[in-house]
Image (tube, rainbow, N blue to C red; front, top):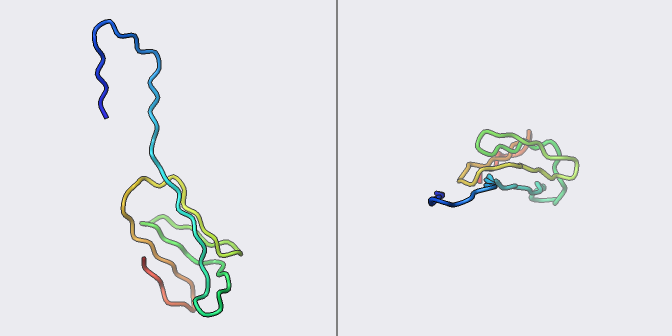
Length: 80
């Protein structure tokens, strides 16, 4: 982004907004459909753990492409 200020212009306020996103989801057992608690969710090296209802959330994510994986003892790791 660029801003051009011309002679005689009166600039009072400039507001910059950081663009970030949020990723949320739910992890369930592929056979029974049961919610899975305690799953390690890894988004490009940032970790979150699923709650009792199987939900997880990543906040303040800078736009981009990241590897995403889900790991829980007794289950095969899933890479997205």
